[in-house]
Image (cartoon, rainbow, N blue to C red; front, side):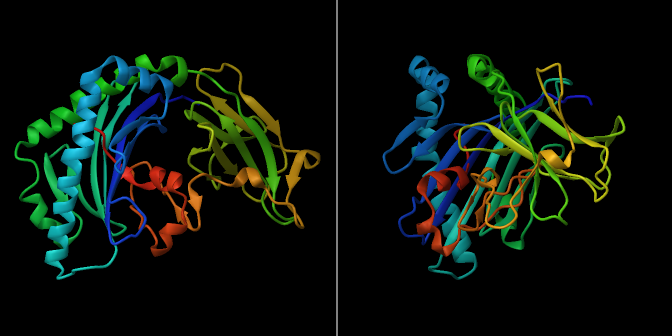
Amino acid sequence: MFMIYKHSLMYFITGSSGIPNIPDLAAFAEVDGVEVGYCDINNQTIQPRQDWVKQALDNYHGHLRMYTYYCFYNLPDFFTEFISILKRQSNQTGGVHIVQKIEGCEWNENTGEVNGVLQYGYDGEGFLEFDFQRLTWIPLKPEAVIFTENLISDRNDEKDYFTKICPHRLKWYLDIGKSSMQRTVLPSVSLLQKTPSSPVTCHATGFYPGKAVMFWRKDGNEIHENVYHTDVLPNDDETFQMTVMPSEDWTSYSCVFQFSGVEDNIITKLNKSTIRTNWGKIKLAMMKVRNTVDGLIRYKEKNYRPFLVVPVCAKKVKMEILQAFFESPFSI
């Protein structure tokens, strides 16, 4: 199977109103799905999540100043006005409201292709997105039309940032962080079954980086039809996990984990004696995903939508998880 080396630099931000004990603004950044920095709005500090990011901010003061201005001056004013306009449009004076923004870029190392991503969500639904091919804003809700008339005075500048400046920054991050970003950690692969009548699931966890594929093979042939795949999901320790489930007839199957940067595949033959079950009271703790807390799931698709609503019971949710949920930029 051909491996696609696709890299990404994504900025996530969420502005909110009416939620007690939660910051009005929270932001973080990811490189290749790994959190690298967080804006602590309450303490007015930039918090690096990786050692190489801390070194970069220490060595390049202009970079730190750029993020400081964007996080603590540009974004708060913009999001406050954004929410205020929406409240006036809908004649709302209170209540819980969430504005989410996702922006960044993707770079395909194989083809050199770059793509920009710029999307807004409001109260859990897609609201507005930028079409980089037509250089135009696309309103996803009637209330978004007013913003298409006021956002971005020079749309060519917008395209230049997302298709030139952002990819250049991404490549720089990949270079200075390569000792960490390019390390390889092999997965632990297990065959799991909930009940005797349940399908068998092949689950790989603890691997790094997240550029990997997993599939079933039967009699030497790759099987992709009638097979359920999860996306690659993050663990708490900055490694990743993924799951693949075959159709009901699972005799003669092997689970194949194919890792970028590793020549040999990791093959696990489907055998009843190797299947781990959670029948009775046994719980599969390894199946707990970082991004599921009290019913709050940070849903992440290939196109970075849809957006989710922070529940009213958000005060129950640990701040560290909210930091990973509140979505968008450190960029400028």
